[in-house]
Image 1 (tube, rainbow, N blue to C red):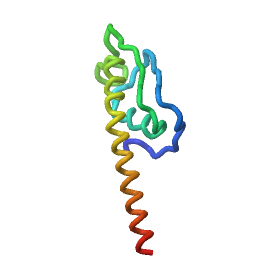
Image 2: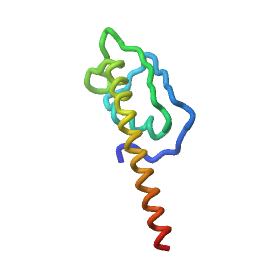
Image 3: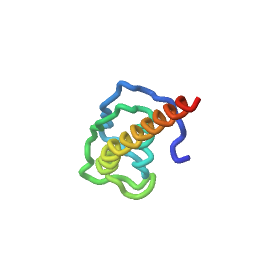
Length: 99
């Protein structure tokens, strides 16, 4: 599994300020992790690094660019989660009707 199953850390957190931190080489994995830990996260605030990023953990990624990718994925991941919840609810309703 790319992202291990994990419990919700906070259902109240809707905005995360990450300042000048870097996302690392896999923004999609980070977005999935944040979406799982903070299901109501809808905004990530970050500072773009005008001087570029670093190569310490992979390809050169400006921290702002990586966080923008993470922020852009949040609505998509939330839609996937909502669809999954709806599917589970429908299946539960079908199972209850059969029993």
